[in-house]
Image (cartoon, rainbow, N blue to C red):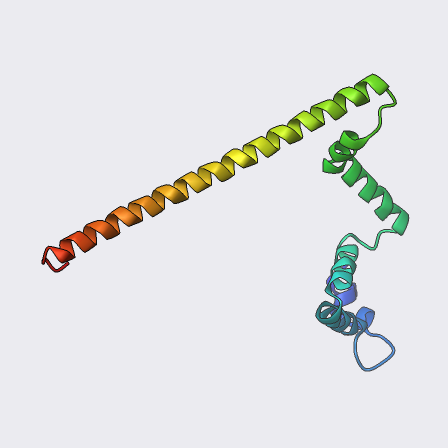
Length: 140
C-alpha cells in the first residue's frame, strides 16, 4: 500500500453522506455520551479500542478474566463442597475468626480510648502548668 492510496490520504474513507465526516459525528457522540451517560460512553470506547469484538467474544473474555482472577477465589470461598463434615468445620472456623475479629476491634477501640485519655491528661497537665505559672506572676 502506498501513501497515495492510503485511506487517510484524501479523506474519502472518512466521509459520510452528509457535509460532516462520519468520524467527527462519532467523536461528537462520544463526547456527548460522556457528558450525559459516561458509563455507556466509556464502555463504547473500550469496545472500540478492543477492535469491535463480537459480544460472544466479550463474554468469553469476561469469563476468563473474572473467573480465573480474583473472582475465582471469592467464589471458591462460598462454594458448597457437599461434604457435611467439612462444611461444619468451615462454619466453626468462620465463627471463630469472626469472634477473633470482634475481639481485635474491641481491643483497638480500648487502645484508642486509652491514647485519647493520655492526650487529655497531658493537655490537662500542660494547662495546669500554664495556669500555675500565670498565677505565680510570670507572663508566658
